[in-house]
Length: 145
Image 1 (tube, helix red, strand yellow):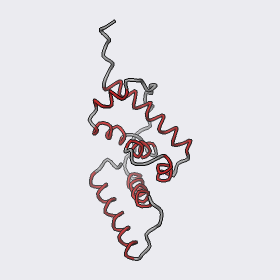
Image 2 (cartoon, rainbow, N blue to C red):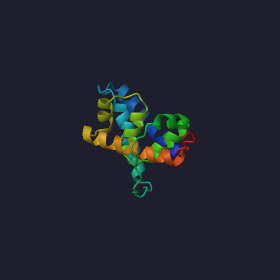
Image 3 (cartoon, helix red, strand yellow):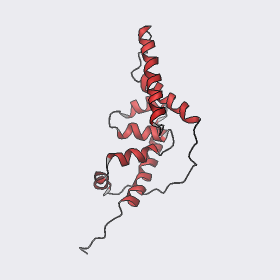
Image 4 (cartoon, rainbow, N blue to C red):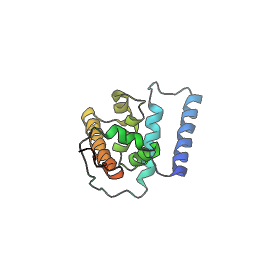
């Protein structure tokens, strides 16, 4: 999320220290995702001081029927890199969505987004991802015509 392994490790350690201190005092929240939310907010705070990417209008395409086969051709690292380039909160929403570990209610809880906002961010991200797929893996001409 931070794009810097050292900063990510610092946030990770700070989050764990906070959790250990709370546990030692018997003050762990009952909420299931408090640790994820705390780590996310720490990452956002750490990234506020860094240079921010300029807003760029990305191409969007309708999701084509060949998308699943194109995605299978990608190294998972390529998808992770693409997601990491998105601006937050879209980056967080896409990462949680594509982890396939969280349902929509859990993603809404973690990101503190409204359902319409989450839906819009995911749809926009998927359309941008489809355009990126077309650029990375162009259609092969059909020679059977």
